[in-house]
Length: 381
Image 1 (spheres, rainbow, N blue to C red):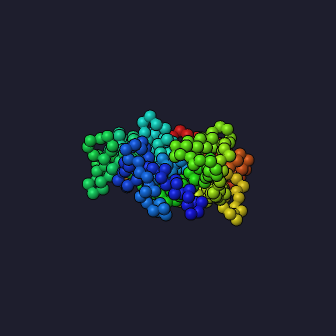
Image 2: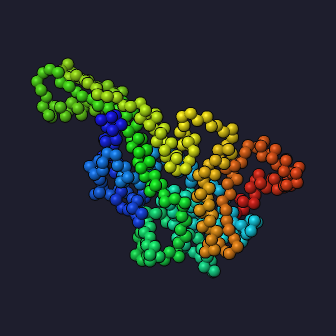
Image 3: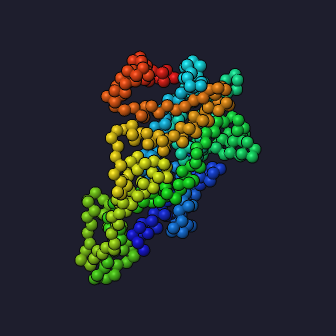
């Protein structure tokens, strides 16, 4: 058996998930694992089958590359102002819906947007429960409902919320759908392999020589109790504070069998990070992964931000703004957009040069340039 096979076989038994599932068959990442239902997956699934691993959001977020990817996507969108529009003009603050300025009572808009994107990323949708309406019936405030607390019956148009006895009609919710079915569905195998690679690398770093035999070469054969005590003492010594120094008597010989594959710690983790980035729609640089033979470099932050927006963030931005622009949310004739200008800002000198050019060409006035710099039209929202 290869070194990789030995690592993965040993790690499968430790990969345990929750058993409470929502309507999509994905275990809720927000529930504690029930101690009555742990499953040793190595006893159930073949060594090459990753499709049935109990991988939930909690386990996925323990992968460093995945955590960075999620935080980058969610925080980038959360920091964007939501701008209410009529035709091509920004609507004055006093005429905007409270749903645009602060969807949830007592929670900043950025936090609501961040966790909305989180739900869309993992599950392909996010649920907002309408808690307050205007006189015309349009929503004023909402409450974000976690996917693990929702059970949807599309045939009856009913939505069950955990802890509530009676289901609610679908009209009580704003459901924001992503443009995919959720990473925990389409990227399950990729995330499972990455998680196992991280665990294997951690084990390899703690135990550089994975297979050790304490072989007795002379003296009376040790009893089972003596063998267990010797092995236990050896394990404690190797993982203790004495730098991994252990002792064997003249009758015990230490033999090693195999070494940890170097690529498991370096190339393996890099490949896993690349696979996660591809699955989540991010460029390699976003998860600090390197692509062999690639010489692509960027001279400034806006260049990277433009790539991030175009190929990763835009689908989420379009899904959110498109749903909030529908007539059951905003008044007819109004629509909204997420403004990404903060991510695309260049350095001060570049902005001043562009402003000077715009003023000279009569495109903007100096006052309009000052407003853009201070984001005055957006900060009042």
